[in-house]
Length: 462
Image (tube, rainbow, N blue to C red; front, side):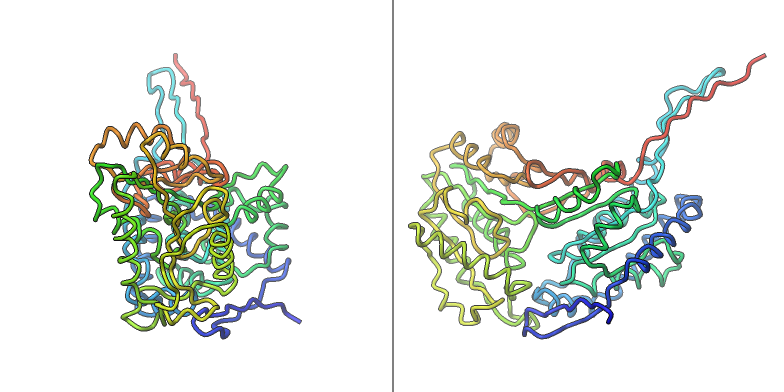
């Protein structure tokens, strides 16, 4: 009997989609097709590859109306937010715009005696294992530069967003990207790990949990396969005494609650200078109470369910443990009657928290945030660094020099000032500690999907 993966909608707990899983032989055949197609794809002019990829993104945009509905059904994101197309287009356009310069040879010498240069070669087949929370943005971060650089791509999407991978494949096929150059596959964990262990890929990009990243590393051990791993975060925000209070509340609370808190770089801890603490907390509570939890297909809904009941159970457990340890909840769940004890979870603000609590140390990935007062920069920096993760940190201040100095002392991948929860495609997306390793976006994103190849050409002279 063929194994299948069922996508359970958080909206109603019913099966939204079901797809058969590829057997080991079928998966190996997909890799073989990708390898066979790669050299011809790489031989195409760069401008042609760029044009086809951009056409694929344009075609994906024309599917927006259906995709927005599908995202609501798959992960519970409210339709009012219109999908992920702003970020998709910004990132794809930028990566296309820098491709020619970034992939151009670095010429060391061009003389009558020598030509010496370093070229960037595609790594071959790129394997993208994408997460469900931003199923188009996260996948295309790697897909776009990988295809432009001359690689073929195999995409394995999360079981919660099976339709996202199908939409990307449909768009690429419609614009004439050859068969085998881009493939969307449905795999189980065992087959995924077997493919990696058998050196099927030149590069593996994984976005997901620390546990998942560890499994990828174990599978790749000894193969010398390059990996890019973004494995989560517990991102902090710091509000200095000179911050614009209203802007800080609006920015940080949106960073904490958007997408029901299910953002890779969402805000999960907030440290506020003691002179602003009471006012910040009061305004934050008002901000949260204005949200509307409910059916994501309702245009008035600002917060839908979490993507799966089990994700909400983790957050409920963290909140309960914190309250038992002395934390004070400031939001009455009864103010959000849609909270059903399942995937629909009321947002929460906790005060009187400390770093011995799970909710201040473990990734929550849900609509909860703890807020602590601090005496100044030194205490804030120590608390922000007191974490196993290092993805982003957000500093709210009127002083750019202070923000830069604080940022230099933070163990993180990105430092924001007066904003958060955003990926600038011109800047490297990276992390440290248990957040993982690797680089996406920016010119460095092309380095992940290519390898250097040196040419030392001595010219014949008479």
